[in-house]
Amino acid sequence: MATRRAINGVLQNFLGTFTSRYSDLDGYWLFGSLMEGVDHLRIDLMHRNSETNQNTPLAVAQRLAKTKFAQQTEKAGVSKSCLRDAYLDITKSPKSKMGNVNGHLCPGHDVTFVARAVTDRGRAYESKLSIFIAPHDAKIELRSARAR
Image (cartoon, rainbow, N blue to C red):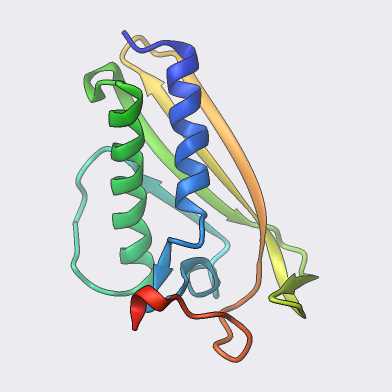
């Protein structure tokens, strides 16, 4: 059985890697495109549901989330059989605010990422992270060299 510390670590590390600069779409940080016109998303982290090879922000986010969650459970030695359910809720605050993007003041929103896991014994764990996200703007965003 996975320990409380291991599951909490999986959720925290997952959020850190998923929201990092390495989560990109065509070399730009994924979340500026993903959250345009969206207030809330839920991504199932364990179960296969209509996998797609599309390159839309939502499809890319779903693939990345599942992959990064699986990597973190494997690194921590947490067997998927110990988990009944795991999902990620991404919620954009309704109130817009100004924030800094690469030295430019831009309108955007605070977005909260909540990763939850439920063990095979029904015990629930949760980790939360909030970050500022501005809509994608290629004029001020830095494109990753990996995409070139």
